[in-house]
Length: 169
Image 1 (cartoon, one colour):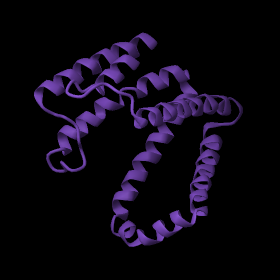
Image 2 (cartoon, one colour):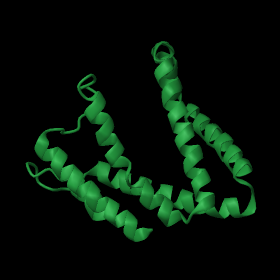
Image 3 (cartoon, one colour):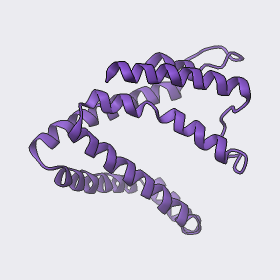
Image 4 (spheres, one colour):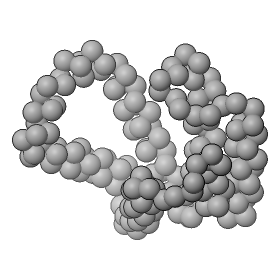
């Protein structure tokens, strides 16, 4: 699964190097994996609804911590009118985020964390699917390479990822 995911990021036109974004995403993966394990322990002591409601409420409070910074407060104030005009998009994004998070945390109560994480590694397939559908309408948003050669490469690596998922299951 990891090798296929890494190969998906390889661009033969550029020299392979690990930039800052790679390390940020590696750190993010570490934290999200730790989050899943802690969720599993949490759901062993409380029901899913109790654990999910309280962790979601605490996440909202932690988000407010960013407002401590004067620069962040100034930026939020300056962008407020833009936020209001884009609020339907923000609401849609949060609806999908909340729904995905709710489902993902519920699944942790049903199956082992490693299987949940393995299934989640199919996410790039869906991103490619959305890019194919929406990329022509919003080319400034999707920077996916969707020519035949790259689609074939990605589908081949997705198939390898799926085989890795099946091996974990």
